[in-house]
Length: 210
Image 1: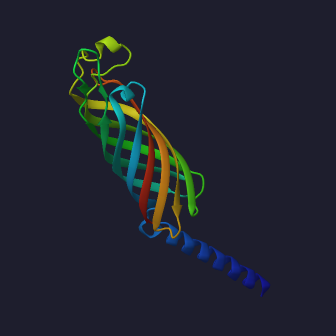
Image 2 (image 1 turned 180 degrees about the vertical axis):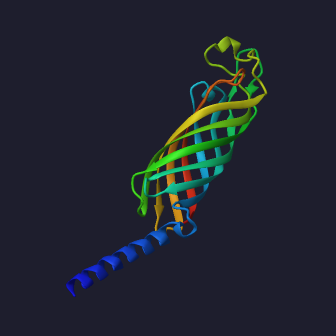
Image 3 (image 1 turned 135 degrees about the vertical axis):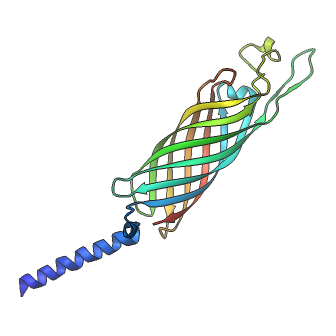
């Protein structure tokens, strides 16, 4: 009788564990991952030579992420839109130079590592991507006398880069999550499109499909 009792307890625990896993994961359809659908808004702080031409930026993106809880890893893709506030400069004997507002559309593929899979989910990640945009790089503080004479006004095209990130998501019911993320976006120079570096602070809402 004792053996039958112990066996029953073991089978009950396994059944409960399997039921919990199915509630937390999409295992019934053969898909052992959760899907995060995120709407994100961010503030962009310009750096280096990009700061010569633009003061700050703001924008947002939509992000789809597939998170595998067993290995605490995820991958995903995001598509966004950003706008940058232009800089202006005044040189003696010349009219004030006013840049036009820049805009860009970034497309990023990323991977995140989650330290915990509970209600609080801190993570670090890295992204690789491309951005298409239109910029005015005619201002340069490296050579003040040539402030107006750089042939960079009205340049558009594609740049490629990388984006490290660190953040934390809070999910109280495994259906809705809210997050805060800090990152850096670094795009490489491409012909007349100069190197571009920004730091970002992001707020996000996430709907979780488990």
